[in-house]
Image (cartoon, rainbow, N blue to C red; front, side, top):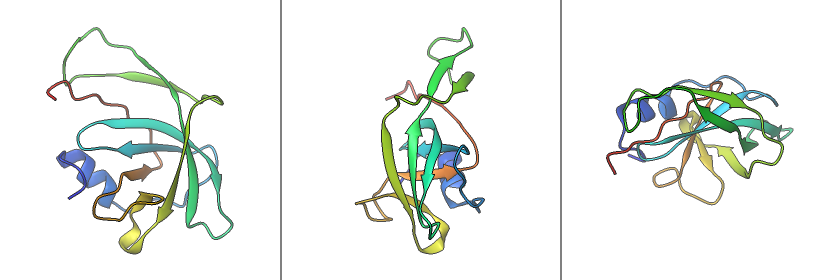
Length: 116
């Protein structure tokens, strides 16, 4: 298991749409989620570049599980590369499928787990 969150596990192992430039994508960490945009896709469709979005929290719930955000593509955001692995999971380049960071394709979701 590469995440400690039921929701993140569902997202990483679900069927993903074919990635396209401009499509939202979410890095799935142990319990946190980090929103970004796909900015490049290889010709083979098996590698992509994800870029961090500008994310603004819009609720007033403080250190709560109830969090809402707005997302805006950030041309100055940092980049990370991901590759498609067996079983359909997108994993950060340079890491194994068993311990690497996964990517959910087709949506943006930000979440910070305050319990750690």
